[in-house]
Image 1: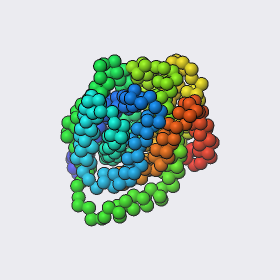
Image 2 (image 1 turned 135 degrees about the horizontal axis):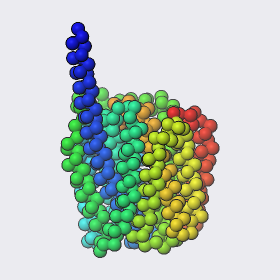
Image 3 (image 1 turned 90 degrees about the vertical axis):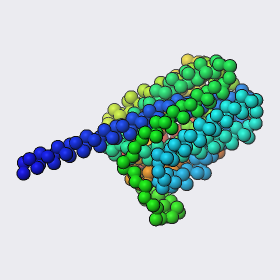
Image 4 (image 1 turned 30 degrees about the vertical axis):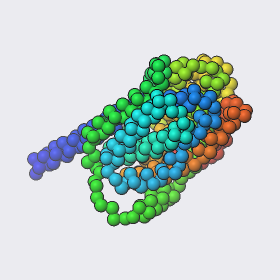
Length: 414
């Protein structure tokens, strides 16, 4: 009897060890891919608006490009979420990444050929962001499948650390790339990063995912996800706050680049290097996030991110030089990490694995309800009254949201 017990315990320990090793391997592949995708994405995020600015010198054209990139998430996020829950996620991810690589190559070819048709660029940006969200939705599900529930916050913090570390190096390397003869080299490097990621994901094994024929219809599966979301009052309440806060978060990203080029008169290469201050702030946020959550709880960390965003936007409002601009970007990056990781961790902890794609799609659509309108309108506001109006308005907006937030039960979420 004692030998049987010992044997059972040994087998259990061996199984547990194998399972942990599998989780670590799967998460390592996802983490490495996130590093490469983030690096490529950072190059694209910095180079694209600079390309549009160099062609047009127009805040409206820049905001229109950003609006085109936001629309796919708004229109398709819900449907993509249902698809992700229905399909083989590994195969889905490979398609999403591969098609993005092809579009980036096409984008670079058009630019090198001197074909500067903004509607075509907007269309490419639209499809790139559609595929990017298709990947991101599946990535959220992959993390849920690869990481035990009690380790999700730590896993998201590690992913955020990787993203923000690349956020420091990406802009600096963008500065070097912008010194080369052709700015579209950045698009080629981004495409190469995506192709490497395809190779990595071919090695990913998900033992927890089974491909079984779906007996329910598409609409029924969507309704199942919607009912789960609508019955989760804390998640709905968090979503409402993110809807309002995301409007300012996205507007600031585009406005800061225009402000640096048009008001501070920074060169493209210097701007790319200065933007690494935002990555440094994000890195600091990633390092402190777990300790802050343990000390304050998730609800207060999210509240702190709202306050810090308000402070950062006000610093941008009073900025008149390179040093104060870099300081404001550092605070922006720190606050953005607390903000995004808090939201993603809360959503994952509140959602069962089999509904992850649908809940991510539904919340992703809700998160972006006001973003396209806010971003497009900001381009005209900048053209009429300047970037400073955007900075101070966003700061006040966040303070109002914080005043409401501290009176809700989310404030005390652990």
